[in-house]
Image (cartoon, rainbow, N blue to C red; front, top):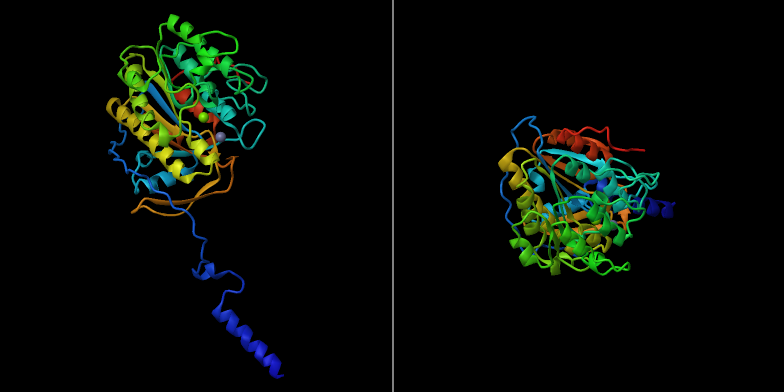
Length: 395
Ligand code: MG
Ligand code: ZN
């Protein structure tokens, strides 16, 4: 009898003093977390206020599509937190989500993800600019070119890597870098800036594609300073022989390259299509490196700022920011937007199938609201330009 009373007393005491089921969160009591690393940006950058677009349903003359490779919503939020609550991402008022699954995998890679956005065709992982039957599909860059627009790409990977390749090339596999480089000769792309010069002049087939590019009227420039000084019409700009370095070593290349590309392309009176890629957001996330990730996001956001500043002036440029997929299963676990501290954790070393954000500014930006398949981004761009679909081969 006495023992039962003691047990009863202890049980009651336990219920009131400790959280035996670990469900204290129901009363706002949270278990203590393990301490983890926090990251900050070395330098907070200034964000200019962009006036909201008020031009109504004006025709779209130019499209600037910015792809943050592997950039999920948490990556964006980490960028917002790291820059103390202020980024260009927040200046968009037309936002949506893209579902990124490829034809054969719930987790897409950048080749299928890029091809969906560039052609409107769902394809298999690894495929570049072709559909599930391996049939080449016209890309938005090629269609824009055919319709008299100037075209360009600026990336922080090799220019032959999966994302840019999806916009200009049609190959069975993303790793066919030499074939992809050769496909640059099949279009009239006006400006491209990125790494990967080796795929043009140090090839197994012995061809020197830089000579071929020169014959097509391109200036070949392989140093950043001269790229930024270029004043002609056709530029092949190489910022590295292979992949450019990560942001900590690469420094400020994406932003001036973006400005330069816009400057060259905007000379065309029929308008332009420009794809800008923050290529290495994906790689920082694969590395589960939150410190490098917030730097890549900041770099990308500054490039977004250049696109928005241009779009704000003319009122006929549509700016779209999105991702091909999420990488890292990244979560901002905690942080502080007064100090810019980001405490982020990763659930994966790979891509995840979670939907990715879409931001749009300018005429036709309201088309990008909602949740839709990645292929719809292509359809919406085509519609925004006012191009018809009839000549596009689809599965
Ligand atoms: Mg990429
Ligand atoms: Zn990746």
